[in-house]
Image 1 (cartoon, rainbow, N blue to C red):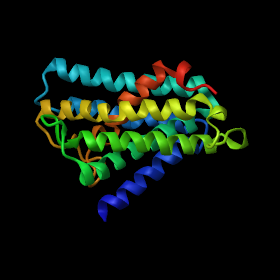
Image 2: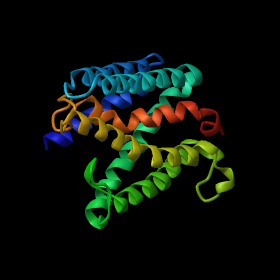
Image 3: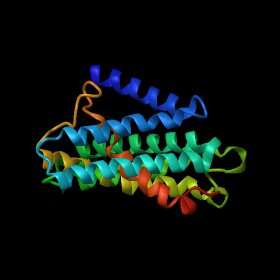
Length: 217
């Protein structure tokens, strides 16, 4: 119950940050600073590993800023869509892994993750994400007619389907090196900033670098 309640509050906070005001998406820099701070607190990381973690969080921060300043009025929609697709990927991978999971995906980094779960998560991200983005495109696009889909309607879910689970494993690798289960206690029942934003870090970096290929009609 506690985990569900805090998860719902977290989702509402992200929705508000992304959509409330033209300036509010810049508030995403705060949790990314939290990620960098958690890297500083991980005592068992070597200086090089800690530096890589801080650079990783900083690059995600720069990528978020770049998306906001490039897409201005639509940046909030883009960022929230990325979060929504990440949540779909994570949730459906969990469900798929519990129901069908047999083959470990990365047993050293994350023993509970399976290939079957990752495939289910990826398929649902692509299908549900495309349906959502086509619907948000309004009367111009129809889900039954792929020829009318804007490129971002399938390119963004496809990118998230690959980047989200890999970003999760990157976060797990840092925690494994630091010999900690959770990166912190930012959200009760959910862990720290890195635990909540691990998939977002890699996804937003890739999205920023490939935005001219993904975020077009």
